[in-house]
Length: 83
Image 1: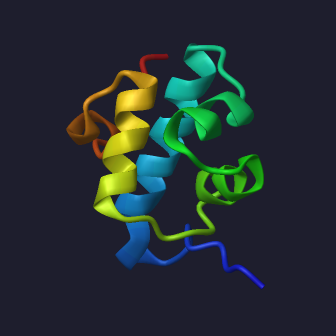
Image 2: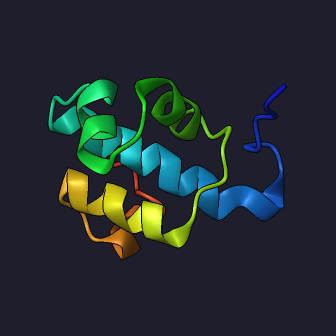
Protein backbone atom coordinates (compact mmCIF):
# COMPACT_ATOMS: atom_id res chain seq x y z
CA UNK A 1 0.00 0.00 0.00
CA UNK A 2 1.23 3.47 -0.83
CA UNK A 3 1.53 5.87 2.04
CA UNK A 4 0.33 9.47 1.90
CA UNK A 5 3.35 11.48 2.95
CA UNK A 6 1.58 14.81 3.52
CA UNK A 7 1.54 14.32 7.31
CA UNK A 8 5.30 13.81 7.53
CA UNK A 9 7.03 17.18 8.11
CA UNK A 10 10.18 15.92 6.39
CA UNK A 11 8.18 15.66 3.15
CA UNK A 12 6.67 19.15 3.31
CA UNK A 13 8.57 20.30 0.21
CA UNK A 14 7.15 17.35 -1.73
CA UNK A 15 3.62 18.23 -0.63
CA UNK A 16 4.11 21.83 -1.76
CA UNK A 17 5.43 20.63 -5.14
CA UNK A 18 2.55 18.21 -5.72
CA UNK A 19 -0.09 20.76 -4.69
CA UNK A 20 1.39 23.43 -6.96
CA UNK A 21 1.68 20.94 -9.82
CA UNK A 22 -2.01 20.05 -9.45
CA UNK A 23 -2.99 23.74 -9.40
CA UNK A 24 -0.88 24.49 -12.48
CA UNK A 25 -2.34 21.52 -14.37
CA UNK A 26 -5.89 22.55 -13.54
CA UNK A 27 -5.24 26.18 -14.51
CA UNK A 28 -4.14 24.89 -17.92
CA UNK A 29 -7.26 22.71 -18.04
CA UNK A 30 -5.16 19.67 -18.81
CA UNK A 31 -6.16 16.19 -17.74
CA UNK A 32 -3.89 13.84 -15.86
CA UNK A 33 -3.74 11.73 -19.01
CA UNK A 34 -2.53 14.67 -21.08
CA UNK A 35 0.25 15.62 -18.66
CA UNK A 36 1.23 11.98 -18.23
CA UNK A 37 1.57 11.56 -22.00
CA UNK A 38 3.65 14.74 -22.25
CA UNK A 39 6.26 13.35 -19.85
CA UNK A 40 6.05 9.68 -20.81
CA UNK A 41 4.13 8.30 -17.84
CA UNK A 42 0.96 6.27 -17.51
CA UNK A 43 -2.09 8.09 -16.16
CA UNK A 44 -2.34 5.81 -13.08
CA UNK A 45 1.31 6.49 -12.21
CA UNK A 46 0.82 10.24 -12.65
CA UNK A 47 -2.28 10.03 -10.49
CA UNK A 48 -0.23 8.48 -7.67
CA UNK A 49 2.38 11.23 -8.09
CA UNK A 50 -0.20 13.99 -7.92
CA UNK A 51 -1.80 12.43 -4.84
CA UNK A 52 1.60 12.67 -3.10
CA UNK A 53 1.99 8.90 -2.92
CA UNK A 54 5.15 8.54 -5.00
CA UNK A 55 8.66 9.86 -4.62
CA UNK A 56 9.98 11.22 -7.90
CA UNK A 57 13.40 12.12 -9.23
CA UNK A 58 14.52 15.70 -9.73
CA UNK A 59 14.63 14.96 -13.47
CA UNK A 60 10.96 13.95 -13.50
CA UNK A 61 10.08 17.00 -11.38
CA UNK A 62 11.81 19.14 -13.99
CA UNK A 63 9.99 17.44 -16.88
CA UNK A 64 6.67 18.00 -15.10
CA UNK A 65 7.49 21.67 -14.51
CA UNK A 66 8.24 22.09 -18.23
CA UNK A 67 4.97 20.34 -19.12
CA UNK A 68 2.92 22.83 -17.06
CA UNK A 69 5.08 25.81 -18.07
CA UNK A 70 6.14 26.73 -14.54
CA UNK A 71 9.73 27.01 -13.32
CA UNK A 72 10.65 24.15 -11.01
CA UNK A 73 11.66 26.64 -8.34
CA UNK A 74 8.14 28.12 -8.43
CA UNK A 75 6.55 24.70 -7.97
CA UNK A 76 8.65 24.28 -4.83
CA UNK A 77 7.45 27.55 -3.26
CA UNK A 78 4.50 27.74 -0.90
CA UNK A 79 1.68 29.71 -2.48
CA UNK A 80 0.18 32.57 -0.57
CA UNK A 81 -3.61 32.61 -0.52
CA UNK A 82 -4.73 35.82 -2.25
CA UNK A 83 -8.26 35.74 -0.80
